[in-house]
Image (cartoon, rainbow, N blue to C red; front, side, top):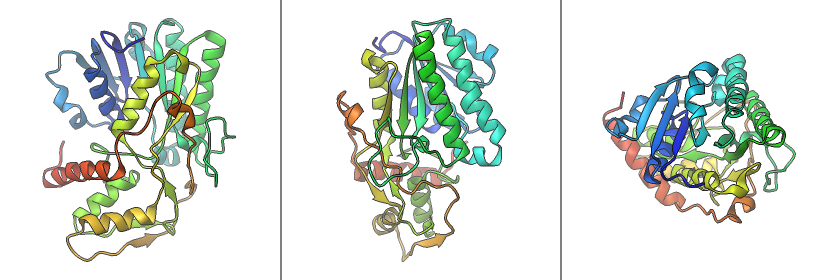
Amino acid sequence: MRIEDKICVVTGAAGFIGSHLVDGLLRKGAAKVIGMDNFVAGKYANIRHLAKERRFSLVKADIRDSKKISPYLLKSDFVFNLAASKLVVSHDNPRIDMETNIGGVFNILEILRGNKKARLIHASTGSVLGSSDKPMPEDWPPNPATLYGISKLTAERYCMFYFQEFGLNVSVVRYFHVYGPRQDYQGPSGVVNIFLSRVLSGKPPIVNGDGRQVRCFTYVEDDVAATIMLAEKKCSIGQIYNVASPVRMRVKALAELVIKKYAKSSLRVKYAPARRGENLRPVPDTEKIEKLGFWAKYSFTEGLEKTKIWIEKELKGPRH
C-alpha cells in the first residue's frame, strides 16, 4: 500500500519525531493527515507551519481516551503511533507511563480490530533491549532497565499478539538516539540538542557518569524515511525493526566535539553523577532493515550542523 492519496493518522503529532513524520507524509502525497496530541509534551510550535495546509487537521486527543480517538482510526488507511509517556515521566509517575505506553497502545489495537485494512506502525525504542558489548538484533533477549523500557516492551508484545491472533497489519519500529530540529533542548533527554544549546549559550556541556556511554545518533529525517518505508512494504507486517544510523559515539566524545566546533570561548566538559538505569551500550544490529533498502542518508556532521542552526534561531527567540 502506498501513502499517496491515503488517510493517515499520526498520534503524538506535535512532538519532535511526530511532527517531522507529519511533514514526511504530506511530502509523500497523503490525501489527509490527521494529527493527534494531548499537548502534555507536544508543542504547537512544531506544527504551526501547517496551519494553512488543507490536507492536515489537528485533533487534541489522548490515546488513553478510546472513544475520542476511535472515529479517526476507523476511517484511516495508515496509523502511526508515536504517542508515548517519556522516560523521565516513567520514573516520576509510573502509572501514567503504564496507562499511556501500554493502555493507550491497547486502545489503538482494539479499535483497529474494526478496521483491519489499516496499516499500523508502532514506534518503540532501543530501551527495550538494554546494553551489550555486541550489536543487538531484533530478537535479542530483551533486558529493559527502566519502567519506560518495560512498558514499551509490553506494547511491542501486544502488537505482535494482535498481528498473530487477530490479523492486524502492524509493524514495530525501534528508534535509537534520535536528534534534530524541534527536539527539546532544555529537558533531561536529547543529549545532542542539550549539549548544543549549552555550548551556544557559553555554558559547558554536562556529562552524566564517565562519558563512556555509547550512542547511535540518528538524524530525525532518517527515522521518518525508515518509518514511511516500512509502512509501505507488505513484508514488514508482523515484524520488528531496529532503526539507527552507523554512528557509534561516546557521550564524552560528543561533548568535546560540540565544544571544538561551536564554543566561542574556552569551555571544558563538566561531569555529574551517573543516571540510574542508563543503558551504557544500547547498540543495535540494523541488518534487517538494511536488507529492505534503508540506509541513513544524513552524516552526523550534516545532522549536527542542521540542528545547531535551528537551536541558534531558538535561542534568539524561543517559540511558544
